[in-house]
Amino acid sequence: MKGKKRILVAPLNWGLGHATRCIPIIRALLAHNFEVVLASDGIALQLLKKEFPDLEALELPSYNIAYAKNAKLFKWKLLKDSPKVLKAIKAEKKAIKGIIDTYNITGIISDNRLGLHNKNVPCVFISHQLQVLSGSTTWLSTKMHQKIMQQFDVCWVPDNLGEPNLSGKLGHVDVPELPKKYLGPLSRFHKKDTEITTDLLVILSGPEPQRTFLEVKLLEELKAFKGSIVFVKGIIEEVQTKLQKDHMTIYNFMTSDLLEQTLNESALVLSRSGYTTIMDLAKLEKKAFFIPTPGQFEQEYLAKRLDVLGIVPSCKQEDFTIDKLQAVATSSGLKHFDYDVNYKRLFGLF
Image (cartoon, rainbow, N blue to C red; front, side, top):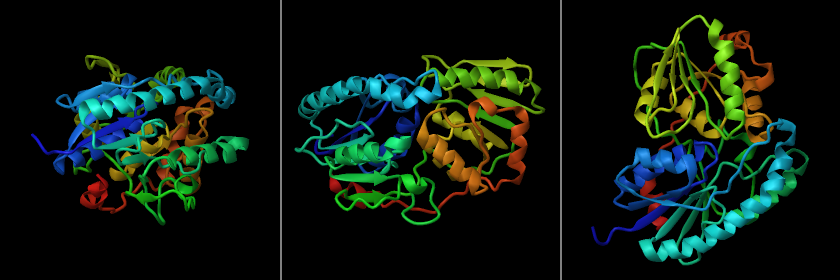
């Protein structure tokens, strides 16, 4: 249809969280009569194509971010990879000019893709990290990140402005020179009143090799679990596979609809403490146990914060044993915040 404004939505391909939290934004754009063009790379792009098969989808330069095998070397691996990331950002900046012209783009929503801005169209940056934790270099990583965010017109923070909130000190920093809007937690899921049929749902995600390390550990450790388990590996492939192994049903991945249903039907969720996962579980008011990705300061902070608050227990990957799950009994679980986003006003930028 002529006359519709066309918005480019482009999440970073680092695990699946950036892509999945863009899903409610994409749905809202479509509901408000915008056209949407998707853009990413790797599994993030594959996931969005599966969710929105009718939308135009473009491949962007890859950041090629990989985790160090040794968690202690995580930060130095990122530093070592920084020339690759800078090269990808440069390639993004170059690519976006052509994309705007070719696809008649009237606005850009970038979820942590640092080079996707252009002075000719309104540009939004989605991030819950106004402060970027990196241990002793937090001040530097934060300063660098804020400098990049200031090249966008506005930062959308997927969290509550006040208390209670989910991101803690990550998303609540005063940056006067950065225009920002708090959206409330974003989730593609809806809470349903369904019968609990699964005792434990395991959801794996995140970059390799740590995803595989955790998969191997949990498949062994959970053999002794008393009860039914659904195990989602978080590997996006052409075809969904399902394997029954004793008390465990193992999937390579789940589409949004099936995952929403399975989450609603599960008594307990075991997963990484990625921010998108936390937002999803809060929306569904779930009890959970977190194992943060080793060496990822952000996930370690979020897991520790929720553990200290008595909301979700957690432990380090190397320390996990099946007995640790008993701590869930005395935790409160995550709760949903009532936060209605005025999308009409939000999209007024475009």
